[in-house]
Image 1 (tube, helix red, strand yellow):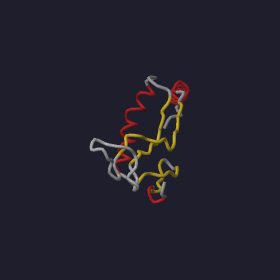
Image 2 (cartoon, rainbow, N blue to C red):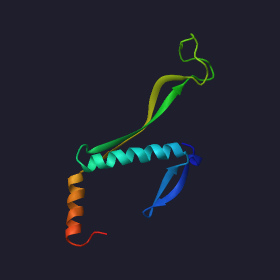
Image 3 (tube, helix red, strand yellow):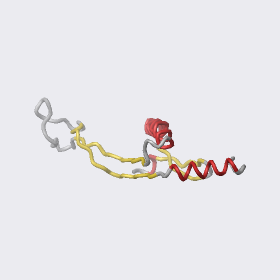
Length: 109
């Protein structure tokens, strides 16, 4: 990805990169709002984050035929290519048990 696609931030004292595209940030925030409660409830134990690239017809005009018989440059072909895949696995029993232990022993924030 181009370096100027991201901006450097600090969150909870940790340096991280954030997308400069507001729609990307909003999409990820919405996803996390749904995923975290599901993980805590035990509905799931992992989250997959897959970055896809959508194929579009290049400048040579190739790529197959559309409804009119010829695809236009920049037209979506309906195919995607996986650029990156991240799988985050969680053991919520360990996380929740540790948190409850800290609360009971007065160590919670």
